Length: 506
Ligand code: ZN
Image (cartoon, rainbow, N blue to C red; front, side, top):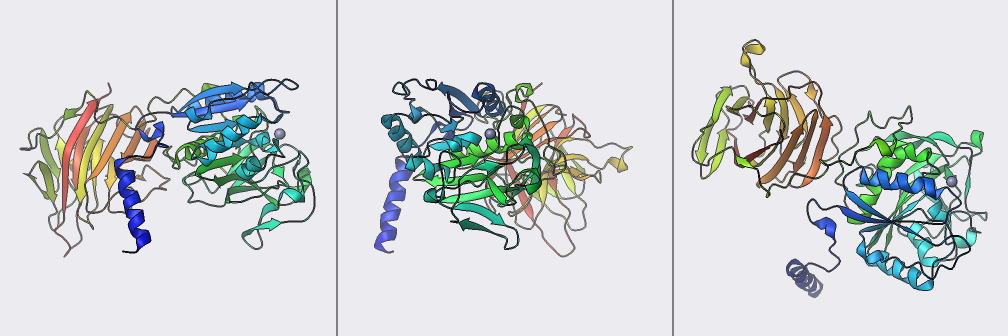
């Protein structure tokens, strides 16, 4: 072990015993992220847009948003000193006079110390002379910005890469407000993973010619600024991340006015970008293609979105859970379909494949409608398995073939946690499947499922995997543990379940 490695090991051990002080509230399961939204001066209509930003974030059920409104134009800014340190992330809808030196310093310390920051549209016009702020936003516009402030950063389609252009010229322009395509340039970043590769934003200002230090800046998506509507003819950056010290910045140039903020493209990227700035991850579920398309701009009034009380993973330690498996025998369960064997061993149900058998299912003798379900599973690699929910077996349907939604269990990388329509020929119910690595091979894996009305959500080892509306399937049925059929001359394989519990939502 090198000296450096040993220092790192000691540091790791210290951190393992004493969690760092910067550990924020979001780290605790189920707690909301706290947001400070700043407004008060803006050449845009902040009085109309601040409520939309607040509703867009709070509608996810994942954020609590406080608003800090600065003194008005022409008034002294001395009194404006929000306590940034109380928050996970600061969102700026502010484009106005410089803050006091003390407030600037406090904000720099907040972000550099690991706080999150989100710059919305004209917030990147603000503070042209505040060096640290310009490093936070990466690039900005207007306010006298020019080549002295840094390069233009554009995507060059012919070279398939970003370029930094130091040509002299002003910073900041936009053409007419028209709908445009947001093209994702990094499909793996947590903010954009699970979004369609390109999707329409409703009529909005497409900022062009932004320039700035662009240090530690990563462009997630661009938009083509069309000359026909007064644009630059360039693929301009629309969504960016910037690392500033230990802090994460998400910069969106979308959201000129209340109409633009009703675009779901603006809303979804703001929601995901704000979570990422706050936590470094995105637990919001993948966005289904029908919500964001590359043809028509999807619109939604955030005021119509009810706070999502079911956003967070169910708390499996709280009250109301009922054990489905007593750890001793298979009372309350019965086998359907194949001839795989199921035995009870050391508090586990162990399923073992049988040569020549179709898929087998160990099913609850009771039906469940709206419920939360949790279990742990450890699957031999090479064996595909799953847990049926709301499933049926009827003499008049395919000779009693078990069918219904199945929570997939599969070695990583794979589809664990996604939802398959077993026995119906319908295939995958979850179409978008961005997360393939939540399952840990050879270990116990905690699955959590919530089925309520048409909505089914899943988590694997705490990671949100699926969040779908399934209108077609039965809303009530048994829970079943699947042992998959196997190919000739393979196996035998085993799959083990334990701690199977359910909580009724009816
Ligand atoms: Zn604007």
